Image 1 (tube, rainbow, N blue to C red):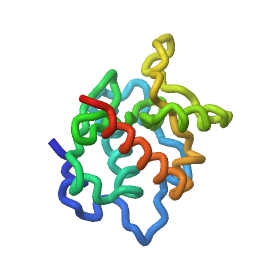
Image 2 (image 1 turned 30 degrees about the vertical axis):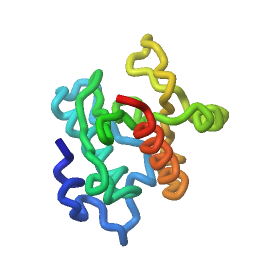
Image 3 (image 1 turned 120 degrees about the vertical axis):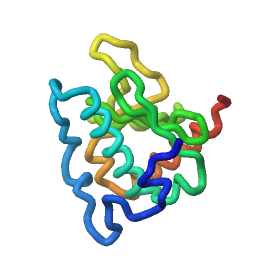
Image 4 (image 1 turned 90 degrees about the vertical axis):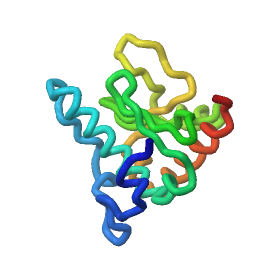
Length: 153
């Protein structure tokens, strides 16, 4: 099942001619006490917005799907997970060489769905600084999608 806004291929919430507000600030979380349905809608919207900004045709070239996972929204491309959006922000699934470089930066961290949970080894939480750099963010999304598609189901 594809996301409706991306599957339609319309401009959705982001106009390519306008500066995307997601590049200016961190994800604004609706609050810890917000009902789960509101949080899931928020995370889905945020993930769709970010993808629409850097890969607007992804849903027309690949099967794009979003599912709930541990209180987050997880993005799948052709059945493989490529990223996740939750209270931690946005995490991308990336190859080890890319992760090694990213983890050398002070504001990039490994993904943990829960405070005392285990680290998801193939994921990096991408800081707003990188999300705001459209070229760099686009390269990371491309690497994430390519990596996800290379992993057998």
